[in-house]
Length: 458
Ligand code: LLP
Image (cartoon, rainbow, N blue to C red; front, top):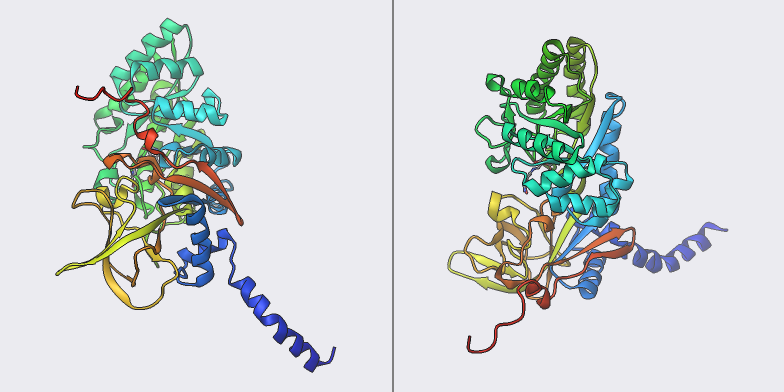
């Protein structure tokens, strides 16, 4: 074709090509919002489609992101740690579709309650594929775990004795590991710093407490001691805390073998891998962590004379960045001191900003002009209900959609019906398809367990 005719054809095609480029798939729209291109009309239209079909506030998860995170963790660790086992900490996002996705990726389940045990079973896990960690387990939770053959991650001597008694009663073997408090500060937010000596979690290495717990358990015929566990905190962005912890835990592994003749099947170094919540934020990658951990691990293995399996159990790392919370602007209000963008979600929907002063990026959809410093305020009747403070964002108007990024972990799972607001819906996006994975809560849901309405006048 002569060049002139070819360029003419391209000229004719240009508007069509342009329209296609402007109509991203849902997955592409989510990625564009993350990349600060939420102002583009095609991106805004994709979110509008979701909001029109499913309402707001709306949690949207990107399946490809979750899968990509699993692949990133596995490809960093598997070549260096041949006996690797990865579990998913369900508490980060307890939606069965999310858990099912991670199960299909080959991950085990780490749970904290009877409810999470039952959720894991419902998704298809068997008892032995589940690890139950809680510093305060009730008798019913212990009974059910032993019945199912679940790994009980023991947090105190009192709990150990209760497990022994229940195993004896059921005439079953209880499978246990101990949660160890290594006394390490990983430098994260205070409320999610779990491995420091003053925290409520685990049996302290300090003073030989953890060692004596193993000694005691080994004398119990009803109990099989299979591992050691620790979890030093969440949203950890540097490797140091893990390395220090691994050294201490490998020291315990060596002691247990040398002094008690005990070989552990596994050493679980917990979850806690941080994700970037801010534009341009650099955090430790799985590759950084695996590379730094390898020599420490090898040294520990050489000293102990055998290699336990390495277990990891992240939550946030898999699902945090996959979640987008879509909210709608109810009103914009200028006060003498600040401009508030009042939206239809609050700390009942996303607790993290109010509870931990956590930072979540906010994007205004379909607007690019007139930047203004605003607070994104929730619809809960409390002063502290601010989702984002002092953000320079394109000027939004009533009816606009905003998207709050990185809301996939500890978002819906920490939400509540406070202020009598039904729970939001959850969607899973795969390419250009969106599947409802939890229907929106309804007004009748608010009264579902309160019995019949009281008779008038009572
Ligand atoms: N394993 C144990 C024993 C845990 O306690 C936790 C989290 C995890 C694993 C998973 O940690 P991750 O990989 O997700 O950091 N609500 C807080 C986070 C609380 C974390 C509690 N434990 C937040 O929104 O930041």
